[in-house]
Image (cartoon, rainbow, N blue to C red; front, side, top):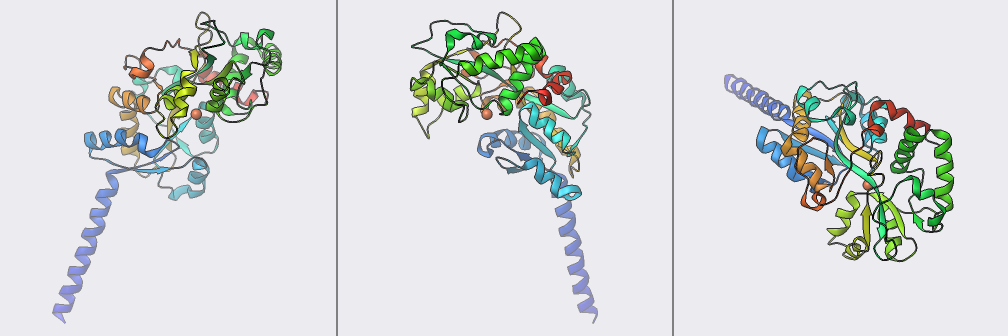
Length: 334
Ligand code: FE
């Protein structure tokens, strides 16, 4: 009798110890939901774990993470959501899945133009939306967005759907600079200059230049890196090598940039660890690695650019992504 009680007590003690151990392990974890490819960002999480002892669990998907966090509700294991484009960060806010985050370290690292004034979303990298111009057929080495509506480019421009978030943000920046009426005129001019009906992603537009269908393609900067480093489909290196990247409006208001960024999840079970991870992503080490794996530009000033980007000129533009211009995203005429 006594023995069996002792045995049961031992089992109970073991069970408590196991739960305690699980609890301890849980408190040293952080759960990241991400649209970024896991294998690319894993080295970054490994560096964070090495520095802090906090394990990073990653859930990666190509869509639907905001909805998933919303559906999981109060029981959601999500601590941090990493996503791209200001509109998707704004979507996360609109879905009610975010929580404000108060961190001096992140405030100091991320310039005001690239973070929310209420401390809800944070830009971590920048991507410019540029013109990929045929090396063979385009002789000019500078361009403006405004010029894309010039009849001299009739039938020469390839661009993905105007309803895609990348273009919606670009159009929003045109509205911010020129107003709605002028932007509508500009859009009509650009549409008249299209070489074909918009289809495919940014890379497909560069392929269009390579194949001779168009002379100019509109695309985000990091696709140049993605194509040049593409060992799976090496023909993409040829697409990349058939074009020069022109950064529009470098002599004026600057090239339009968007951000990738992060939000803290509303019901984050590991809030302290989540804040530590976001502080790491905004640190010099995190910024350099995070921007490098995605071929993007760090948001933090003074952080070195990857060699691939270092020789490309980027003129910065802040106006499109101060929170005041977010309203333009929903007003964009698409
Ligand atoms: Fe993209």
